[in-house]
Amino acid sequence: MEFPRRAFGRCLFCRGLSAFGGLIIATAVADGVRTKDLLRGRFIPATDACFRYEGRLDTAGADGPVVIWEGSRISLDFTGTQLALKFADAVGQNYFNVEVDDEPAVIVSAPAGGESLVACPPLKSGRRHRLVLFKRSEASAGHVRFAGVEISPKAQVWAPPAPDYRLRMIFFGDSITVGACNEDGAADQWENRRTHNHALSYSTLTAAALQADYRCIAVSGMGIATGYVPVKAGEVWDRLYPAADSARADPPAWQPDVVCINFGENDDSFSRGHGQPFPAGYVPGYVALVKSMRIAYPKAHFVLLRGGMYGGAKSEPLRMAWDEVMARVETDDPNVGHFAFSHWTETHPRVKDDRAMAEELISWLRQQSFMRRFL
Image 1 (cartoon, rainbow, N blue to C red):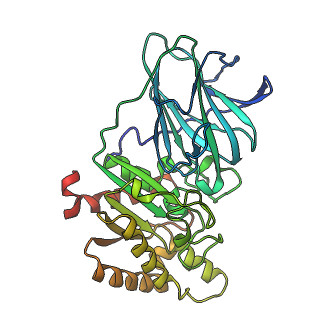
Image 2 (image 1 turned 90 degrees about the vertical axis):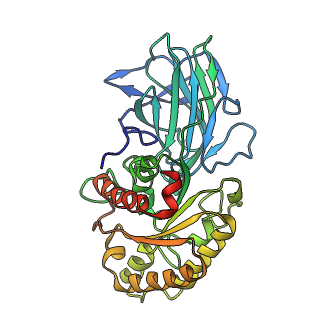
């Protein structure tokens, strides 16, 4: 199966830090050429109506949205030969894929607490450009406020045309769904999130292949009843930030057609690693999660997923518990189905594994009757 050339953003490597005018500036590098001077041109604030925002964002502030969840997207059409992106109030690590005229780069936002301007390489004159900014690192690694862009002094801006989406999808899960470690080498690493590329996760690849507008609400280490992080799936699925005490988002404001949920790997591996039995709270917790989400998404078709790593493929306690969840929720709700991945890995899935998983899921979805109206 061939995946679309553009899956919400692609990955080349451009970065660097320098000081300018009291700000921290991340200067993009492409083909060995570094931009030397930061543009002092026309500033377009993030609140301008020409920006197109996609994702679960914190829009409460007056100075621009906080970009939180992986897969969040910002786009803008503009003219001119120069572009700089402005960020502020960064917390943790925030990596983005930035694409201008199909030429992508990887950038990092400013250090925590400061402002930053990310200067892109010079652009071709005499044409209309399109900026697409895609958050590739996960919400639990960091978040940052997008403040706007600086463009050439006499440049113009437009709202990009609405994408030609066929359906809406939302993915809930853990590190497997996020795409954690998928560009790492032989061993998983968590210190530098640049190699955790959500743009090449199975969830993003699946959404792109089906031409779906999508959201991803997933946290590495999170389980239904237990896991490697304190927060549990039932506590954050409807939150603005990946924390149990976060303000709630407004799920009904964006209604998906298909909801994919993939939990169990952390419940299984954390328990086994600590010499504990598989958690008794997994089944009732999962059933409660699905019922809560059904209230928020009354018309969506739910697909409960299993797999991607050892637990989902080989753990008998997890399989038995997951089967019990399926039996309970599918009996009560005819719009719930399930799918188990065949492909799995000992480490976190790498990009080739994400592609294999996406192929399986895409093929299965295309065969389902509820998908016919979207294909």
